[in-house]
Structures are given as C-alpha cells and as structure tokens.
Image (tube, rainbow over all chains, first blue to last red; front, side):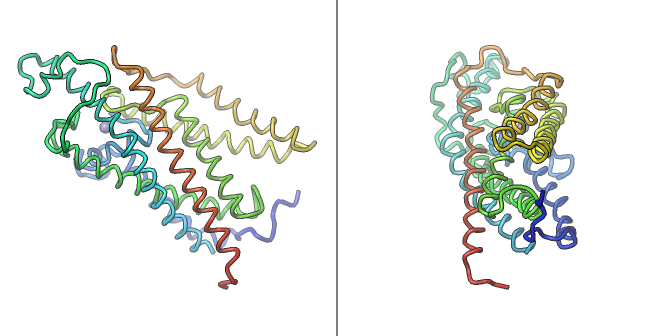
Length: 61
Length: 266
Ligand SMILES: [Zn+2]
C-alpha cells in the first residue's frame, strides 16, 4: 500500500517539536487532575477550575 | 510546517475551549448549582442544629428545585475544601479551565496531526482534521465516559479520587490502543469498504468491551440523589466535550482548507 505519500512531514522535522508534548500534558494535568501535589497551591487551582473539571468529565470529588 | 500546525492547534484549541466554555456555562452551571444545593442540604441535615440559616431552609428539600443563590458570591459552595474560592470565581474559572484544556489538547492534536499527515487517514488536510477530531472524541472522551461517566459535585468519595483518576486514564489508554488496533486492522483487510469498515469497528469495540468488563466499576452516587439531575449532568458534560471537539475539528479543518487555497506562502 502506498500510504507514505509525498505529503508526509519527515520525522526529523517533527521530533524537535515533540518536546512541547510534556509541557502540554503537564498543562492538561494541572487543569484536569492536580490536587495540589504538583501545583503547590494547596487546593486553589483545583477549586478555581472545579466546575470545568466536572463538566469536562474527568473524575473529581 | 510543524510550527504552523502547532500554532494553529494551540490558538484554535483555545478558541474551541472558550466556545465549549460558553456551552458549559449556559447549560452546565445550573446543574452544578442544583447538585451543590443538594450537597449543602445533606450537610445541613447531618450537622443538625449547627447548620447555617440559609442551608437550613433547604434542609429537607429534595429534587431539582432552583437554588436561588443570587450572584453566587458568598454562598458556601466550595465543597470538601472550605471556602477558598467563591462560586462566582469558580464560574469564571470554568472558562479558564476549558480554555487551557483546549490549548493543551489543541497543541497535542496538532503534533499528532503533523505525524499522521500523509501517513494515515484521508489525503485532504480538512478531511483528516475532521476524521482525527472525530476519532479522538470517540477514543479519548466517549470510551472513558461509557465506563466512568462524569459526575456532578456532591457525587463521589474524595478518598477514592486517585484510584478513579487512574482508572479513567486507563480507559483513555484503552481507547487510544483500540484506535491503533482498528487502524492497523483496516489497513490490512482486503476486499473493499464492506469488509474494511466492519473489521475496523469490531477491532475497536472488542478491546473496549473486554477492558470495560475487566476494570472495576465505580458506584459512588449517594442514595436518593435525583436520577434526572445525574442524567442531565452527564449528558451536559458529554455535550461540553462534543461542542469542543466539533468546533475544534471544524475550525482546524477550515484553516487547513484556507491555507491550501492561499497563494503558496513558501
Ligand atoms: Zn474536586
């Protein structure tokens, strides 16, 4: 199957940008799942984004 | 190229997050207010005479009556954690949450899109954006939702939050893995779309069902919690994600389409 068309982006171009992934995942974690352990703000971030967590469907209290 | 896609993903993710925030604020906040009112009523009942006057008036109300909280400013709504953030601030925080969620998801999506482009999926960027967003919604949102549906505040044991979070992440993993299995299956099956599509769907559904049966269930809805409110909250929560993924996929695809028509920017 000729699935690898000329339109693909070479991996060598892609890999450096993958360094952004851990930062993005950390942001997602802080918004959705942190309970103060990583953010070190007590429960502040948790409470501030609490309605968002519940309505985005992630587990919460 | 990758940089362009990443910037596009971040900005459009933020935008779609705010759009989802508008939906969540309009349709979802009244459900959260109702759930918190029930929680306060239950707490007032437990603490008996020590209850605040406002809570006490709701002491034995059940059902989903409108809880008149005024501006929501001073109401004791921050369950379990004391009074750190007022309800009014939490309602503003909703937009921060969905916006930042969109930013993070949009960025990851863009990089995945850059990797898929020309390798897997439709040839046109716009079609790939829509197909990828739809697949992501099914794998990362619908699959975990079916096993561990969203709950409003007042439902859920704080003691089990870590376990529930891990199980939820496990279901996301199952959704992604099943997607990979389905794509691999679709690519290896010969005999046209009438063989390929059923095979792909089956290859997606079977691992999801098996994992759902193997993973432990979570049942923490308190006795007497109104089933209608629970249902409405869950549908609203799924709706918030649907609004996000539909707007994000459409916006991302539309911008790809626009970029393709623009006179080559180098
Ligand atoms: Zn919580």
